[in-house]
Length: 296
Image 1 (tube, one colour):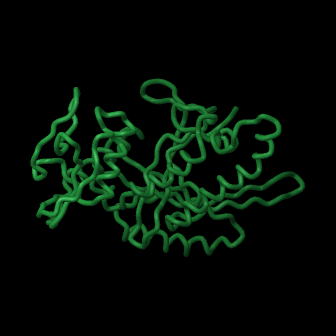
Image 2 (cartoon, rainbow, N blue to C red; image 1 turned 180 degrees about the vertical axis):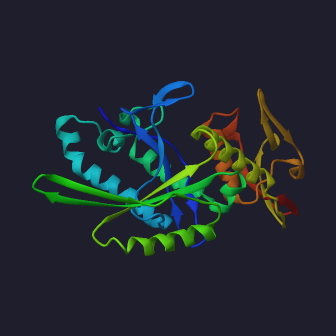
Image 3 (tube, rainbow, N blue to C red; image 1 turned 60 degrees about the horizontal axis):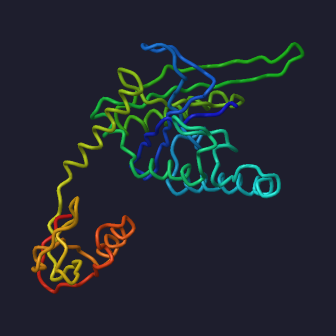
């Protein structure tokens, strides 16, 4: 069975709110030679928005959801009547797509949708990528196919690729090539977008992940003062925190584990009950009308 493997993603966010959905993907049947031998080929490609580069995030998710709905509606009768795999739970089986290290049968519709939603949430700008020397590289070309008695005549015209170091240059290159494309009204227009760095694709992903962790660690927390807060109370006192063999508690609510909102407190209480923490059912949420400082 031939299928496409999704190895990773790095969406690019533009100042107009649109994103470029870059996905690292490749066929399970094609191989390439690397410094360590042979492996399945993989390349950066734009998903769902060819021949354009960028798309509004909501429109992208709508396209993904539309494909999911179409596949489920198309195969739901076969699943119910002929015992075929459930298209919702085994979505990758029907579209020929898998995640790295897994079979298409194991890819659900929900996982596929979340792949793109998480890509949007973790998108970086062109300028942020430039800080770690990772750039977009654009290859434009036009292709013309003419049917003749002796066969198809194929003509291609290519321009040199350009590396994009800033969003300002990105828009200038797009405008320049749109003008260039006008010279070939009968040709089909193609633009290939790649993520480039001096090294293998693993180096790109490692640099991006390290950069994202750096951004998160450098984010300054904001001081928030409230005249009330919430704690977990039981007959023994107020919860401080859970430890390996039980929990610690205090008789003073000011020293207890504090929550800014009742919703946060209830969410935490639900989690410890689901995980069967020691005497989790004994706790209840209580509001404390006293001043408290939070850093968020």
